[in-house]
Image 1 (cartoon, rainbow, N blue to C red):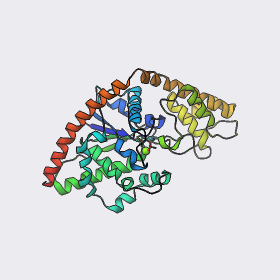
Image 2: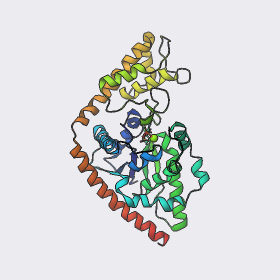
Image 3: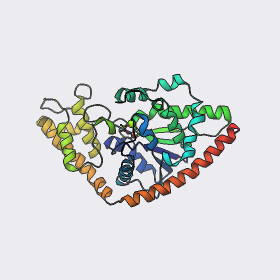
Image 4: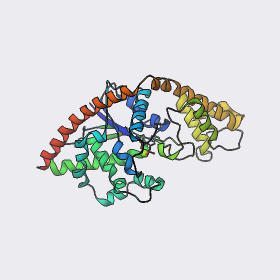
Length: 320
Ligand code: ATP
Ligand code: MG
């Protein structure tokens, strides 16, 4: 099948290892084969924050993270929400296709509300999955490389596409999610590794920062290191992290450490992560802010051309 790939991230802070093993690795793998769009979801930053914060800085850093992991702007269209008004206009008809009940039972939205530090929950919190449907459908995306938290949102997109087609005629394909090697990487506190939860190892972290983060990770006092996700989740999580970075089974790493205890485990994890991040850090340093501006200007223009066409089709189908 000839896929169109669409995925993206919010510019809320540096990308981390969860992004890498959940989505970025798949993007790099797929970029040689398929037409691909990568969205910097800047409008979505205010979903769970009062203000967009250092938005321009975060956008630049996000693009540098992309370049660092090997996303190639010659093959991939990188663009931002705020530059594509036609994409955002799809939100209105799409909102009419889902019920309030469907929006309020989205499990990822519920989890994000639970972790939000905002005083009140905004309407955008409940409707952003529909905005995400517009992200995917504006380019008629068929494949969406994402982490597990995004599965309910891809379902919303399929629902929107199906109902639109039923009411107004065939316009949209039904996209599918593609999860990475580790669809839900846990952070150093045992919860989902997230930019906003202070529990992440950033792809741009220095060797010392990485070592300090891993030193602080919780473990237990048992000397014999075993891979037991149910009874020793913290130890299992560190072994998983090392396993991903080394391309090895976590169980084998546990066997190798044996009676070394938490100190040996952390030493091994730190080395594995730093070794893994070394080429990524190096590539990051090879790019400038000028590169970033050029890539975004070009990506925004190409994405906008695509969005104009789709919005035209939508308006025609609806009779406007
Ligand atoms: P924030 O806390 O600001 O929401 P985030 O860390 O959740 O940030 P997003 O920009 O919301 O990052 O997510 C971008 C992509 O990365 C999504 O496809 C998401 O599923 C994936 N992703 C995020 N965190 C993880 C994780 N811990 N494991 C696997 N995939 C992840
Ligand atoms: Mg998130």
